[in-house]
Length: 134
Image 1 (cartoon, rainbow, N blue to C red):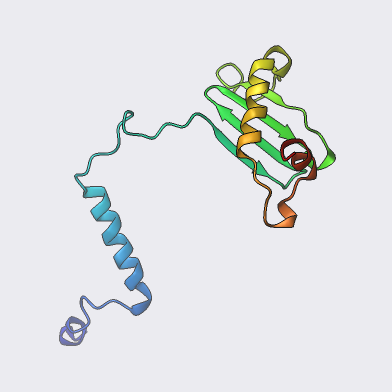
Image 2: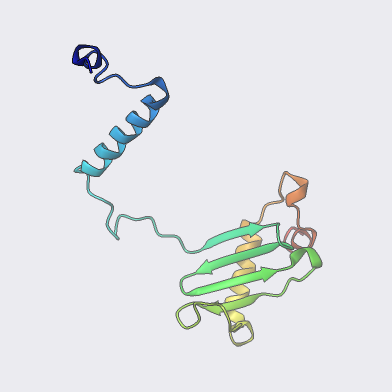
């Protein structure tokens, strides 16, 4: 093989792989960066996490510390909370909503504060609108 011909191509990168080369450079730079990762005090703390999901019959969930409140089948007008203590029930098998009405009231207050009527009609959950957007 003629080394003179191969040497002139050494270091050249096919245009298809230029983005990959830049990404690898970025990842190497990121890995070797000397900027400290945020510690526990620097991380932003939230009082709760709230999410709505119109698929699978309409779902809503809120996470507050070790508690997780869930509503399922909202599209079928089910507006009952299920409550799980994730410290003792990580698989969410035991609904303890009846034993903790204070937490259920807190979940309702969060939905009242956070729920917004979706702009896209396919995301609309009528029972949720009726209960929390009066």
